[in-house]
Each structure stands twice: as C-alpha cells, then as structure tokens.
Length: 106
Image 1 (spheres, rainbow, N blue to C red):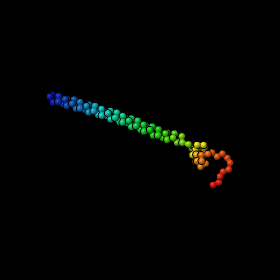
Image 2: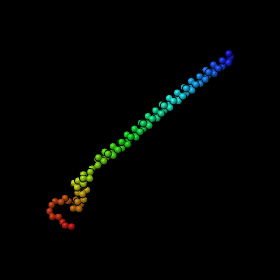
Image 3: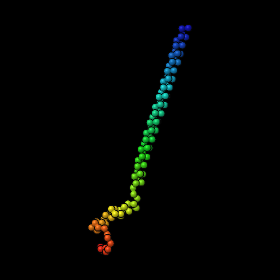
Image 4: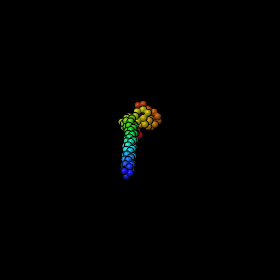
C-alpha cells in the first residue's frame, strides 16, 4: 500500500505540471494574439496616415495647377495695359502711348 501513495502523488504532480503548462501556453497564445492585433492596428493606422499625407500633397498640386492661368490668359495679360508686351512697347516709344497719326518707318 505504501507504493500507491507515491504513485498518486506523482499523478497529482504530473497533472499539476500539465495544467501549469496549459496555462503558460494559453497566456503565450493570448499575448501573441494581442501583440499581433496591436501591431496590425498600428501598421494599419500608419498606412492610412501615409495615404492621407500623399492625397493632401496631390490635392495641393492640383489646386496649384488649377490656379495657374492658361497660356491664352497669360498672353492676354501680357498685352493689356501694364502687361509685359505693353510695357516694352511704351519703352520703345519713349514712355508714350500711341496717339494716332503717322508711324515712323524703320
């Protein structure tokens, strides 16, 4: 009968160790899943931030391009009073507007 007591004690110890190992495995699995989910969320958030930043830069470039005058608008502005072509013509005429009359030949 004395041999049965150590066997029961060994069985209890083995059962305790198996339960302890199961708790460690469960905790490791939960920790892994939480870490993975947290890492995935952090990566997901970072990716969304990068996309938002890139779209903001694209938006700014599109807005800048939309505000740029067309070639025709620039030509019209250059020829109107105060424009580059108009100012150059005034300088050639000594700062005077053409008032009609005879035009000197070259």
